[in-house]
Length: 260
Image (cartoon, rainbow, N blue to C red):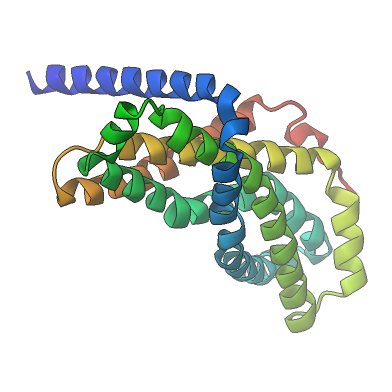
C-alpha cells in the first residue's frame, strides 16, 4: 500500500512538473514585455554569482594543478597536465561546479521567494489582477539562468586554469611553456561547445526546479524551508543526471580528444 501511494505521488509530481514546464515554454512569447524583470534576474543570477564562482574556480584549479601533477609525475607524464586540466574543466568540472554554486546561491533564493509569495497569497493576488504568475515570476528567471550560466562556466574555467597553472608551474616543477602548449594543443573547440551546452542546460534545470518547488509550497513558514531544501537537493541531482545524459548524447564526444 505504501509503495502504491509513493508511485501515485511520483507520477503526480512528474505530471505537475511537465505541465509547469509546458506553461513556462508558452509564456516565453511574452518575455519582451517582462524585459525589465529579465535583466534584473540576469543581474541576480549572473553578476551577483561571479564572486562565489571565481572563488570556487580558484580553489578547484589549485587542487587540480596539485593532484594531477602528483598523479601524472608517477608516470612521467606531467607534461600532459595542461591539456588534462583544460579538457576536465571545459567538459565536466566547470559546468557542473558552476551549476551547483548557482543552485546553492540563486536557486535556493528563488524557491524561498516564490514559496513565500505562495503562502502569503501574493501569487493568488497576481491571478486576481489578471497577471499570469508563470509569465511574471518564472519565464524571466528561466531565461536569465539559460543566458548567464554559460558566462559563469567560462569564467570558472578561465580562473581555474590560471590557478592550476600557478600551482603546477609556480609551486611544482612544471614549466609554463609546456603547460600552455599542451593546453592549446589538446583543448578543442568542441570542448567549449560541451561547456556552453551543458551550462545552459544546467541553468534551465536549476531555475525550473527552484521555481517549481516554490510554486508547490503550501502551509506556513515551514513550507518555505521545505521548498528551499527540496529545490537544492532536486536541482543538484537533476544537474548530475542531466550531465550524464548530455555526455552520452552530445555529438563528437571523447573520441575527438587529441593525442600527442
